[in-house]
Image (cartoon, rainbow, N blue to C red; front, side, top):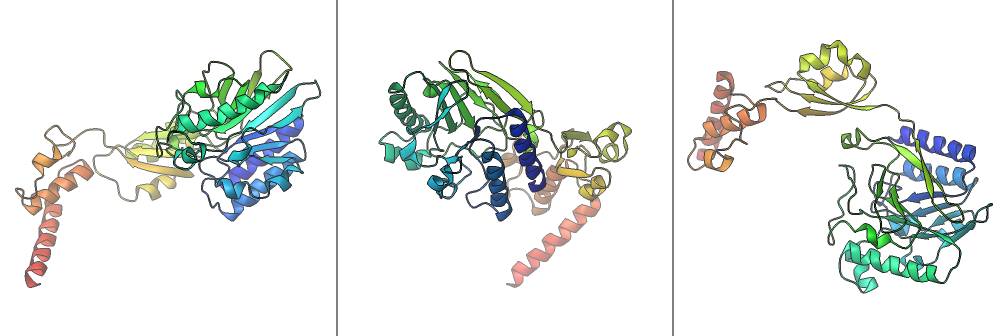
Length: 370
């Protein structure tokens, strides 16, 4: 994905320059692991250099990032217009920006708060709601001492009601994995990270919006329209947003059918260069399926064996696997045959049965000799 991520960074810098953007906000998950590969670190540096030459950049760590590593040199970077808010002690210390039209915006950052770590630090119960409520209470207290300002919170969490995908890492560890939208009340706009699909979540006041990931990272994102969000915050009144689609390297598509259909049907010609997930419906798993399909489609990203009908050997039938496949009651050959029937969705052949019988006899003889 690195090549496509680099293309996105170049596109984003160019788009920010064309639109005269006054602030770029990144709400976490800069990387996909706490110790990222060297090429990813270099690309992030390239993004910060290009964007900070145009306007301030405000960053908070996500659950995939290491807050300590991401925040290294934060004070030094701030002098160059890169503001990385990774320190929980600074949650109520905003970046204040004044727009040419006179709008004063206070931007607060809440780094990803892990209940196991931060509940004790904050003196609250061990849950996502509790640690986020503590952070927001500090922000609302600071805002109460500021007059005639607009406010934005940049956070990283799973807000109740959001629509997730297979790409996000589960936040359940450390208490209930989501937090209600009401936690973020009292600010004009909440720029939220974590969910990969762009979406708006209801709130008692203000707006909570996920811009989503700029590229898809699983086929659960097949229907997503990847985008960045342009936010217009006037001195007072309604905040408006514009969704700007991000150019994608290729569409995601799931193709389903027999191996013969997937290899030959002309209706699939338009997907030669798509990112393809193939679901094979043959009763028996075809040999060399990935190699065969890759000869037709240039980007076969995932392969699934999904036979369309159940066979008598299907272990998921109503009779239940435990009652039908008791090793204390069923001969080893029948047990093995039932397993083969399950994974192939078809009854074993006589040749397969002979091979299994031979293997079982070999094992039994070796056990007896030992």
